[in-house]
Length: 461
Ligand SMILES: Cc1cc2nc3c(=O)[nH]c(=O)nc-3n(C[C@H](O)[C@H](O)[C@H](O)COP(=O)(O)OP(=O)(O)OC[C@H]3O[C@@H](n4cnc5c(N)ncnc54)[C@H](O)[C@@H]3O)c2cc1C
Image (cartoon, rainbow, N blue to C red; front, side, top):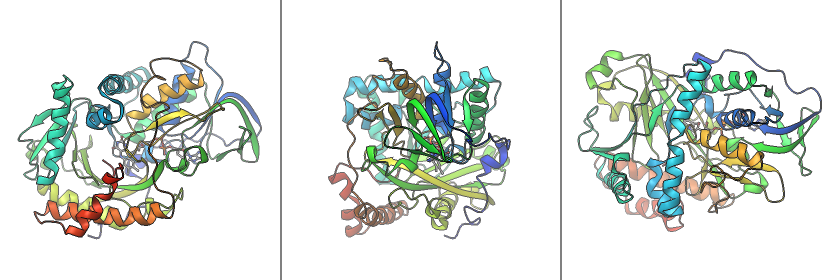
């Protein structure tokens, strides 16, 4: 389907709504600081705040190539969660004890964001109404059941409640409700964070592209930044960075946004801030806004080549079309509403879809990557971990199982791009067929099963 609005023609609606237009000057002289952070999205900004809140706050500089919030942090779906919806994966990866420790740490994320907003007098449309994962085809039912069973098996059935009849749409077969979920206005949040770090004494340099040199210094705007500790918070741009090469793939994710339709939302009974996503591998994610619009996202965007962040991640009309088609099909009550905006961005996908945080061996360079399209909440946690790593601490944050974990490899280029592209097409056609009640072709089924055989996940779920 051709999207009503071609993506990439305008900045994300969130940014148009929330960008105050303030920009810090770019770097114009050499710099000596305690900690240099590269990247002004959620990860870099939460890290900067956590560092400045230490008993002896270090001198922190943040270098951002565009402006804070320009990246996916300012244009995502705004789904915010902890780790209960990852429980089945976490149990497989880390075992029950460590999985539960991570879930408990994740329980601090939404309260942490709530406290930040309250203390700073900011409003980022935080609505703590939970997240609902729904099945829209029989093939998606086992995912829902697996979530419910996993929470029950670890003694926390309240964290993943079965919803036999979720309501809102006749397309929803059943669902699982996660109470540790919220939605936010991502650009309001990221701009609030920018204001906060400036108020807390962080030196912010925007329009400043940074490059790590092998001697540990940073080149930026022809100047040199020396720092005792460096934090790499560049998301998808880090894909071919040598220390993590072979651990990340870049995919595109796109959203469409409707005109305000508060009356239709009232009719469907979807009047709260509940975030909903389906159990497809290339998931749809949808939520309302405070002014009664519906955002529908599709994680089915193109796969990148190496670290190239090009138009595939901003101008891919077919993916925006799939998001719009999902809107009309999954929410029939909205079949005729007007779509007013469409945009996309890159996501940094790890082989198991779980982020990894660490320090490059024999250096003081730290990183948090691999959010796999789920970094809004987790970046709060990563900010704590990165601040502790930079401070040389050994604490509850640095002992989380995300830290210094063994990360499965993704294939090298060009196999990644070519093989990933073929498998993506197979999964898309299969999921499409299943949603329309048809059986997928046996060839598509066989190809779609390849990542599982290799112990990898493809897509955004
Ligand atoms: C369309 C879309 C929808 C999404 N929806 C959701 C969602 O609903 N929920 C969820 O949890 N996650 C979602 N995500 C993912 C989420 O947005 C990211 O995981 C999160 O924003 C990552 O934050 P970050 O700070 O690590 O990266 P970013 O926000 O990408 O910030 C990195 C920054 O680094 C800067 N940078 C890069 N290279 C350099 C350099 N060399 N020098 C200086 N600066 C540099 C970039 O300009 C950028 O501003 C979505 C992503 C997309 C694209």
